[in-house]
Image (cartoon, rainbow, N blue to C red):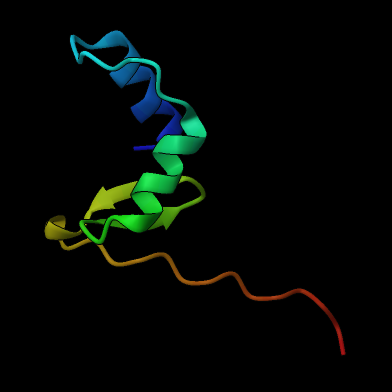
Length: 62
């Protein structure tokens, strides 16, 4: 799920604190070891067994 979608879901929920920002969600996902980055802004639960996205290969020429 993309961190923007997570922020929207929180704002639409019955959760008491809805004043979250998308950047705050992104920061928390980065810090939390229960989540893995699987694509540009996309996160999954580590327990699902999905592997971390490979780092992008630099296109710089030598």
